[in-house]
Amino acid sequence: MQRRSAFQFIAGAALVASTASLVAACSESKPQFSAIDMTGADYAKDFNLPDQDGRMRSLKDFAGKVVVLFFGYTQCPDVCPTTMTELAQVKKLLGADGEKVQVLFVTVDPERDTPEVLKAYMANFDPGFVALRGSPEQLAAMAKDFKVFYKKNEGKTPSSYSMDHSAASYVYDTRGRLRLYTRYGGGPQALASDIGLLLKS
Image (cartoon, rainbow, N blue to C red):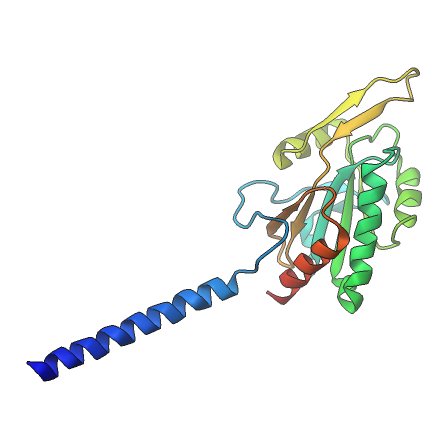
């Protein structure tokens, strides 16, 4: 009886140890991000919009890269240029891995943001950044799917209006899966760290 009890104890201890190691392995495999972890989200899965050169684009075009997607407009006075500048800094902070990051800028102001304007705007930050410009109907459909807010505020003249819009970015892993939602003002260092984790996983 004593030998059997000892055997049961040893077997039980082994089971507890293996379970503990399994739990530890699971927790270790899940990265700890600074941004909001969106893994498994059932929206914002893809898009199909023309870029500044008129070429239709979707997430599959950027397979193998971490994609950072941001909604904005070129005449935005603060949030947009700050975000784009920080994204350019993120690529530099990542060193050689910066080439594995693709920034996409979706204009919420297709009326004024012509392809020529978008090309010039992207060049101000990084020649590799890509702008996406859909029709008003395409933009509305994408904004709804991505749960993004934007609104036109009339100005003193027909062309002097401003746009209110969501100020966060979506981050996709190298397999095109939505992984992170990063709020405006998080800083380039935190996002570079998060992207580094995605590239390693």
